[in-house]
Image 1 (cartoon, rainbow, N blue to C red):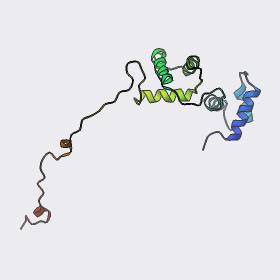
Image 2: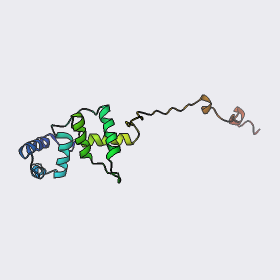
Image 3: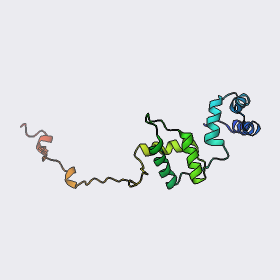
Image 4: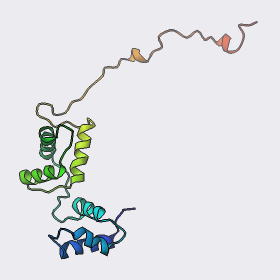
Amino acid sequence: MPLFDENSNKLIIHGMKKWKGRHNRFVKISKLVPNYTPKQIASHWKNYLDPNLCLDTLEYEEKKFIAEWIRKYRTSSGVIHWKYVVNDLKIRFGKRHSENKIKDENNEQEQGKEMYTEGNERKFIFHFVSSEDFLPRRPSKITIASLLNFDNL
């Protein structure tokens, strides 16, 4: 079940049109939709409802740009300023992607699923496995006689 229902989404969109540019617009909208905090509403707007968002998946060049941006601008304490990544991506490619989409891409890259840095496109590691690896190392000493308890006679 989604956190926000269709009626709440309509009220948020209406509130954003009505109070566009106001610094306290999410506080005002939270009075229209009291089940949600201003922070929840702001996050939902910037990641899902904003009509300026590009809903397409990230392209290869965009993914590569994100990896390079993070490598270049991540602070010494490891902080990534996501709003600047979003903004620079918009300037470079003309599309505004949500922070969540960009964070998800970064998490995929950090987990080693895909690497997009120069000279290090994608790495595949193959292990050679021979059939000898599956054969028993010593022959079994089990005999039919021992299974039938005939060797104790």
